[in-house]
Image: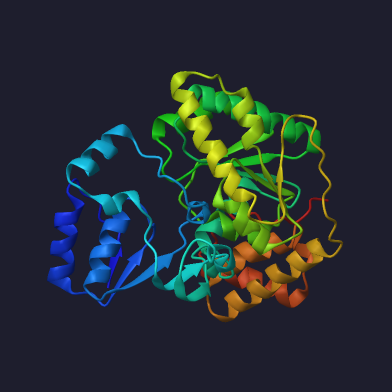
Length: 364
């Protein structure tokens, strides 16, 4: 098998060579337009089965003329790559978070519910647990997930910070800002500088961990983004977590320069895709209303999950993971049972007394 992520200046020639050399039984595609469709048709003509994997909300956009740059159009027309202007179709299988939505756009022998985000949520890793503890993110907090768009970095940061600060103050909650893995260092530096005076807006410096795991464990008050796939996956994780797109509000505030208009149109175009999914709310301005769905057993259920994970990790000799789950379960070590305290202290001993761990025994 090969993965359809091979992007070159002369795709048809290279894809033909690729398929002829390897003679794959399957080609897995993460997209279906442009050079991906060139590869798809070459593979199909060589009796190779096509499999599409959902790579985010872009997978769910409606069929229409491709929004291509002038340079790409000229190059593809010059090389007579007619397939590049169409969509790949006729898949053997489609793996997607919401496969039922894709049936109107694609033909497939089999539609399979799947998400690389959600399939890894239940088993939270030590890195994510450490970050939750490091930043002390709680169920009363809000998570914002960032995206990259063709908007000047300072304009982007100014509009976003104004919106997040307004929401934070209205809801009396801290907002933790999780940058995109592809955000440039220069963009992150701008956010760090502009957020230095905000105590209610916290920039998570690490940006390569899986945010869905954190959402599953923390059960935050809300998740906010422009048009991120995280809004969709969160509605699957829990219907009790409110999800908000701030795309409209953001696009209203951003200065309408020539460059920014490119990004604004991208955002509004991507926002339309979110209407296909349930339980996503859209904030237009500062007059928004927040009606949190109450789950009276939420905190108890979360604590029970942490305790169970603590015990399981301890039994499996995963002491560091056990320590982190114990601290998520108890604010005060004396709230735990005697057996749990003994196990916890044993974990500390086995981990050589990790100096960053605070046992949280109350002072007299």
